[in-house]
Image 1: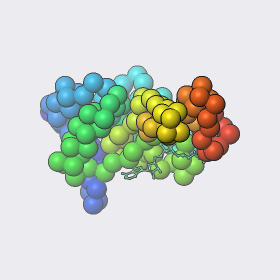
Image 2: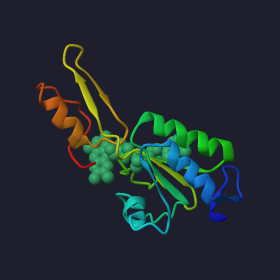
Image 3: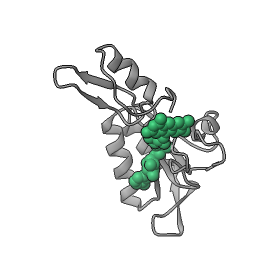
Length: 149
Ligand SMILES: Cc1cc2nc3c(=O)[nH]c(=O)nc-3n(C[C@H](O)[C@H](O)[C@H](O)COP(=O)(O)OP(=O)(O)OC[C@H]3O[C@@H](n4cnc5c(N)ncnc54)[C@H](O)[C@@H]3O)c2cc1C
């Protein structure tokens, strides 16, 4: 059964079956959110509320392995992809209508190496996450001042 329409990278659209969606779900530890799901409106919301994108589906990744699976899924079907990190890009570039959102907002780990004065930050982290982790070592990354940005 075809359940939803998704845009192709080079124009036009395709349909995705429930079997394809279920197959993706079974291969990731995160979740796949569809337009009829209760959390869809919250999950698609970006910081800049002027942008009201309605993605075909949202892959909420928990790990790098999930990201790999999501990319493979989209690449095999030539689907239009929007990557979402913190969702704070002012131009709303973390979403697009009928695209697949590869959502990294659950991936917020921050690892500080105080000896090297180096920090590794997952793509969904916000500045507050970085500041909390670095300040424990009296270090700071001169990025910005808005903790939720
Ligand atoms: C209130 C506010 C305060 C801020 N303050 C600061 C500050 O003090 N200092 C500072 O440096 N910045 C600041 N910013 C900017 C903010 O930090 C940047 O918008 C942020 O770094 C963007 O990262 P993000 O993870 O939120 O991106 P998201 O909004 O998640 O955007 C995703 C990114 O991925 C890209 N992308 C999407 N799809 C694809 C694709 N298919 N292929 C390749 N790339 C893709 C998009 O172009 C976009 O850049 C502020 C923003 C806000 C809203």
